[in-house]
Image 1 (cartoon, helix red, strand yellow):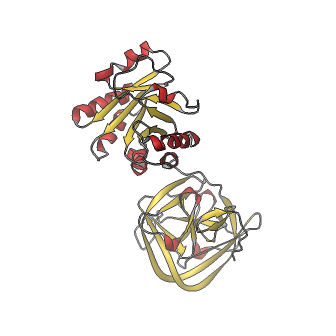
Image 2 (cartoon, one colour):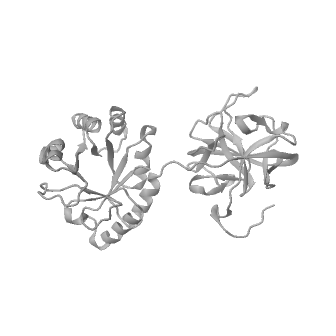
Image 3 (cartoon, helix red, strand yellow):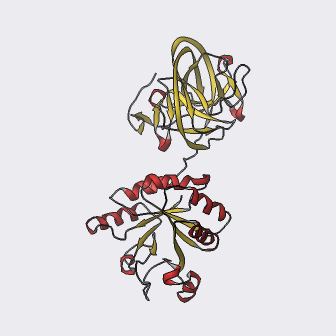
Length: 367
């Protein structure tokens, strides 16, 4: 999980107490204040960061980290020697090439670097991250809102070590912590045995085109029922009559479920540009990918019935065509129209029923 620093300097006094209580409850990484006294009552579960607006006070109080303006307050290394037990780092405002170089040097050499990029482009942050590759310090980037935090966490696929956000309302701390979690949890896949297949006539199927290249052992989970899905592979593997489209999964009939982020499911028919789905590989490792387009067209359909070792039935309805494929154990690619009883597939068996895509414990019969 990335670092989440909440800046309460200048926050409206009417909501500051509630914001700090929420932040502590949500286990933000740090509370940032401009006066040592505001850090006194914070529990040991949260890092106490002092970022003074004026002169550096003689008594730093309970501060664990002090972020300073080197030109105004002095060299962080000298200050650290003067205040044993307190870590120091610079605050750098990046507005041009010289200040960008200062930021790069800080990121390479300092334990903590808090960086404020004044221009909206993320290219300067990319340069700093590249310059600091392999460094042991932490880069904390100032962001305007949670949406920008999500972007900053993904820059150069590595992202900033953390972000510094001034909350505008109660709830921002919760959203920031959720954004910092970034990736998605791995899933426990299970082997399924094909029981039978059946040609079921015409219907609408959805191709899910993402903004990401899938790997050869990766696809998305799709199923007719919320408690049983099969791993559909992308069009990464060569086909004899058409070019590969490694961003696409020919996913199934439009009624089908697929898994999106944060444990929710969506119908394939609900997906659109900008939606999120979960890419899953044959080891159950996951990542959230963005949908670029969904193509829904009328095609012949085939129904695949499979069963788990515990006897749970799983159904998937796909386009009835040889080039539509699913994944088996070990990453074996299986053409849907050639499946026969006894063949082994990889699937996922969620434990919860669903209501508007969210997991819920209630009675629900799907068949």
